[in-house]
Length: 561
Image 1 (tube, one colour):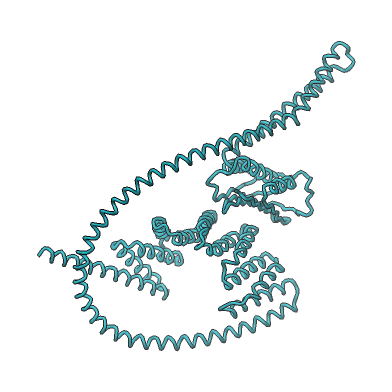
Image 2: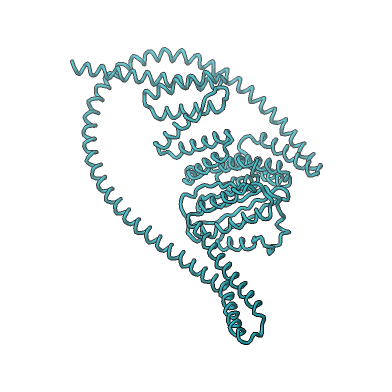
């Protein structure tokens, strides 16, 4: 009797769970349909009902799917007057617990879009860089294309040079793109160049797109390419080529209109035939469903009874064996982890000692050179003056007052040289706190004078670089910032520092008066030649993009081992 009651309880519980699951899915599908029909309030209400039922059933995958759908709906419809972020937060939490790289990448991209729409560009960039970290795995590398593309558009308005940098990064990933994606990226880059009035460069990108054969949408892309080429040729005054591409544009447009009309007629006919078949199938399904339901109920009762007994026994046996195995594995892992930690600590200790010794040796050598080259000659001269004073005290051949003044000037000069050496040492001390901290302190100190505002944007500098490399980079940034203050007449500047894929990227931009690099005298005191030499020694690249009246951008890439 007790077994029969237990059996009936199990059956009723299973039936109730299945019923809730069907209801949750029903509301979810209904919400999708409402959303498709632009009935967004109804869609939102049905998503919420579906989410509540999935929460009661504790089906994590379905809960996450609902949260993402609700986020997308609210984000795209301002009239709902809801905050979408909590739903995205829940989806992100699920992705972290699941440890699924694809889900995490999707969540990070949605965060970036959310902050982009909220005009929080700095936060949006941060999430796009986090998403880039995930694309290092081979199965996600294709998503780099869209992320670099978004980063390009993110900088189009305020930082066009940085936008161009990311457009080029995107087009550098040709192997990861389909032909359609490649053509789309060429067109996007050409539009950016056209807006910058760089018509010849825009034409070059469109020409690359023109020769690519596509699997689908060839006419649609041809129409766009020909139209843009015609406009660009018109802007540069080549009316013959402009007319040629306007003719091609009209031919592609007419062909596209005819094709779309035929497709629309075919779709209507297909829809009619599908609806007719669906009605016939629906009647047949209803009859079959009733028969199948009765058969399933009988079989379900039998299977539940057998499965409950078999699984109960198996679960007990497997759980007992599994607990023993886990205990042994835990003990082994604990021992291995202990050994790893000891080895790691020793390696870290040796690395730290070597770095300290190397850094101290370099610093001693630099100070010794400064003392020998700068202070040594002054002290030697000072010694001669004192000897002259001693000899002249008795013979009075030279004006005593003049000798005293010269000697005093030499003492002042020696004091200033010692003071400069001490200040140079202090710069190293600041850099020893970390490159990022040093740059931020420098920017804060300069900005506090209210003559220029310097913003520092960073990504990926979660760990220290080699000490001498940090000091060299800090001095380069310090010298370039000094150039902006002394020569650019700028009111705003930004220092972007990012470490990604073992590459340190530094972008320094200002809104100053700009300069012509070709007309610049490299020995005029700005230190550009010296900076180029140091970066070449580090096996890095140094690019300057400056336009008179529109400020300057300096892009530095340095490989980090």
